Image (cartoon, rainbow, N blue to C red):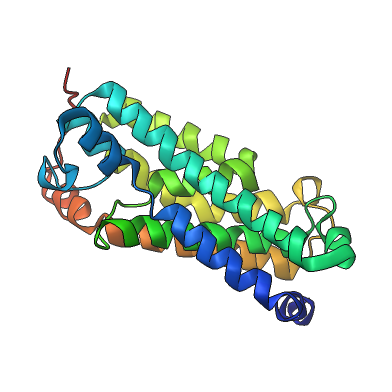
Length: 239
């Protein structure tokens, strides 16, 4: 199966390169920066924690701008995945359409990779001097298209932890840490497998989800230090 996957990307190298570039450009659209400039004409990276993400927008600008930021970041990731699939359809030909029918495994892998390039764009946006957010909403947006079941489980974990702690970073990191495990369990058991998904694809999806988790943890390293010291703040919203 690894050979089949390698052949898939080799046969569609142009589509793969174009999908990666488009996904990165989608990710570089940072709604935290855009929304904050529209609302208060300031750079969110100079306010609060300095992070260009939903939580800092909520704290520093307001709830409504924070919600708009969240929706925008989720939408851009979903748009990146959908755009990449459209690129494969346009450049892959009839055989590609057959491979893509029923959300087959090769395009599932391609979707995870598209989300990763969108995440890279979000973290290091070309439009905003390569300084962006931390990638949680982008990961959620990718999952909204790739597998909403995994997203619902992780959202449930996040909400449970938030009710218990009222600390967004703790809730986020708990859900993200469980992302690879949830992915493996979801795809390992046959009733939940995508059509044509073998054990190799299950492993690849798990590894890719672990890549998302590692990146998000690295971007939250300062939060982790504060959590360990007991200094991480509970969420307080700006009116």
